[in-house]
Length: 329
Ligand code: BMA
Image (cartoon, protein in one colour):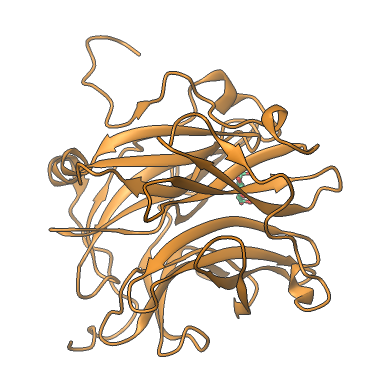
């Protein structure tokens, strides 16, 4: 970092990484890509992806009073794949995102189920992160990187997800009356082409954050190189009532692998957020990200600074919708 450059939007915690496999109460290979939320009592809860020595992943809860240190990790896996009840979980469950559903007053966890047909999106509901109501596969393979919006849009639940199809690996949004049947799918954002940092594939990072200017979305973008993919994070803003409409998209990435633990690990050159929480000042967004598919790190950014940055630096070409104009609300 050159001191003459403007300050970064994201400020990393000095004691990163905050969670590592060495600190885990049971033997594992890696802990990364955690969903995040702040519980009613102020505790920060991370639902971490843990990869064991079989190569399969499961989910495990870590709790902290201040969201930075003093983590208390469940002594045993919190949510294991259930290959009998849910055969789509045969090769593990990964990359959870947490959304508090206002109308249900429960947390919705969307996670990737790795089936023999490829990755799909599964849903589980919980009030306490100790017992879970599994809803099974809600978006069939090949699909991943999904999170629900916290409130209904036009009377329906909305989910952002990342199907792979002939048009590429892009972000979509779908709607449901009941959390089970999903439709009215529309593309939200495309991977760019050529040498862009987000040209290989993109996907939702943490669940969208509602702001006074619309839905602020952190997304990951990958670029292929001769040495493999580099995963970084970018910003975009979507319309509050019609979240398929992109209002702004930043040209530059805002968080990329720099620190040694972000560059070196099981999969090097990867920063991969699945969770973010808004702090009580209502402006600081605390983002939890997997680093090099091995450990978990955290960085803070100001929501108002991110929105201003999008105003100043964004590619203002709205993403053309793949569908007719949005439904009236
Ligand atoms: C993506 C997902 C993430 C992983 C990333 C980098 O496709 O599988 O879980 O962190 O690749 O390996």
